[in-house]
Image (cartoon, rainbow, N blue to C red):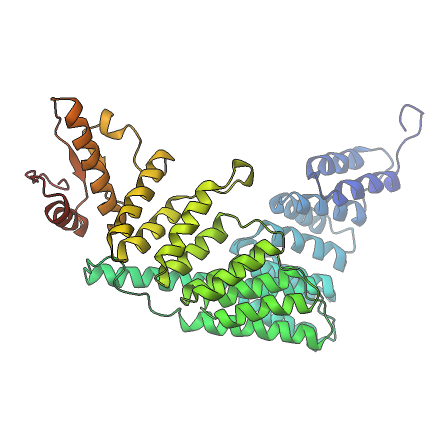
Length: 453
């Protein structure tokens, strides 16, 4: 325009700003702020509310809530523009996309400010506020906002319902994790040395309450004729999984198909996890195969969830087969065992009786060393200390057998033997390892250095 001698007006600037704001592939907040700055300096051109709103929306796309709020406050301080619902909603959207409690509080403060100014929130405004609550961990406030929408006669769409269900799912998972941590602390206080001997208590009651609320929201969506998509179901399944409600999780997979919604990898994995926590191997395995039949390649999370189900259900043969399957997957499928896989596979095999399972433990551990999951393949050649302090008891037992087998092999080739220390840390692991060395390997364990065996 300038090369042709045409000076851009506010309309031209706003068109460019809208382009920056609407690009969902590449965040263009820098270009948006630069254009707004040019508009402000352009002789005879005044940036209007549309200009500022578009620039704020570009910042929201780029998750730059701080920049968006700087613009918001600058416009308020000017006092020359009449603020509207779109301006406030855009600022709230920037806060919601940034996530976290601080920005959630900022978004809710803006919602309150709208009421004080007599600006009536619309469906999008409330939807953004619900999303902010979900990202900030305030599920109670998210549900309260849904009630306010109903009272105001506003229609709640799929995105807004999804935000509320996702908030419940996050809260349920957080409750479940906290319960698991509490269980671990109680077991440590009791100094229980039996590997896997003390099962976790059921998930916290709050997780059940939260999953029930998520299921109720799905029902309301059906009653109100609101479309339920894969995100709707996946979030609800996650809430059920956290609460150990495996039947409801499996039923939701069926409901998805009944609604014509193809279950995605997240939905299947969440349902498998729910079955795993409730020791429902058959249902978990069936879902895993359904997932494959639907053309979805299970990822590491799905494999670990199924192996967890096998561990909880005492299925050593099936768990071992899953380990072999993972090890045989091609690199193009981008799935290989990790330390969680190893820990659960060995825990399952270690509990099972018989020589075959013991040999499989040794085979799995050796494979894990080769893959670099645990120890280093050359650790016994380059170091006189091996740290096993962070291993689970079954893995530590397998490590001891592996280490001393390597020592025995080396002693046959080399007369020179170095001292070896197993670092166990100041915990019950030390006594456990001593028992392993006495009962299984019977080597002289003479060192009594602190934290060493």
